[in-house]
Amino acid sequence: MKTIKPFHFHHVIHANASKSDAQRCLILAAFSDCPVQISGLDASDDIQSMIRCIETMGARYDVKTETVYPIKEWNKAEIILNVGESGFALRTLAFVGLAMTKNLTLTGSGTLLNRNQHQLCQVLEKLGLQVSSNSEKLPIKISGSITEENMLVNGKDGSQVISGLFLLAPLLEEESLVTIENPTSKPYLNMTMSRMRDFGLSILEIEENTYKIPGNQKIHSNQIRLEGDWSGAANHLVGAAISGQVELHGLQKKSAQADRAILQMLADFGAAISWKEDVLYVQASKSKKPFNANIVDCPDLFPISVILACSAKGTSRISGIHRLKNKESDRLDAMCELLNKWNVHYQLEENSILISGTGKVSGIEINTREDHRIAMAGTIASCISEKEMVLNNESCVKKSYPNFYLDLGV
Image (cartoon, rainbow, N blue to C red):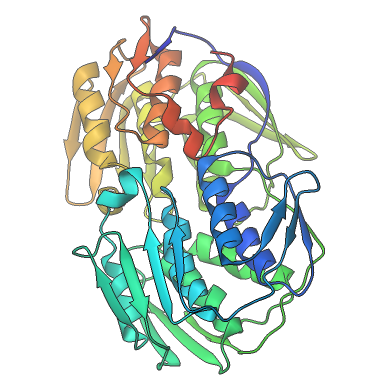
């Protein structure tokens, strides 16, 4: 339990490391032809889970020098990987692990055990692999060899599986051709491709959403500096926009991270936004205008965008909500529960939610559902409350941002 008293945002913060960027770099470093120093790794649960997985596969991470020493022995009879609660680790290592073994088992913990992995199982089977699972949930066992080189993948459930396929392709003997139908979260796929190119890999988009990836490529990089995390930073930016100001260091202005979309929401809300070199400044909106946003490519922004909508004076529309059920929690249901407790009127349409903000919410007990995004958004809601918020489980923020409350000073 954690009690958050009402507060106003007046902070100078350095953005936490992007776990999305970190996990991609850790995989690539593990298969590199030389040690790779990765600057900026933190102790978030998902990053630590990825480190444990690459070490299980045979890599070694030296925490003192922030250096990954790559895998030396690639052929193993069997590999069992525990990905913790990391959906990205699950959906990428399910492919990358096949570069080393014909018998791969993936397990996990916490909320990930309840999440359906239909897209992952379907793509693996299309590749010619044998897949057994607990009704498309963990544990998942994969065996056999890849027999399909030309792949048509449906991306409507997200890009992580496609990232896994892309990360595996350069390690295969033959060239791969991947065509994506219904692409979503494409900024995150762009991030994968960008980091692959940083490690010297070739990926060619031969026509829209069709990619040719040569096999037998060498992976090489000596040093990588991680990006700051736009997903975690979005909470601070909204906190400033609704109640004060923030000076935020460590974000890349032209980042490929999808959650950079929060800036457009804040601009529409009327917040003052400016960059000075690599430092982002946001000051509270005087008008607090309602906004329209589509989160289909950035579903992690949904909880904090709901808080922004509550802060607006009028009705905001958030579209693209169909992908919210299979996250760490059912985020649509979780946030509707909070809106009901706050007596904030909302209306659900086919793929949108309309929220009639009044500029404030009431202090309540928040069920975080062990979801880091719900916990962080609920905390920021205290900026527009006259009474305290009580979080039933704040420790779930360790999944992506272990220093969240330390940075806030609450």
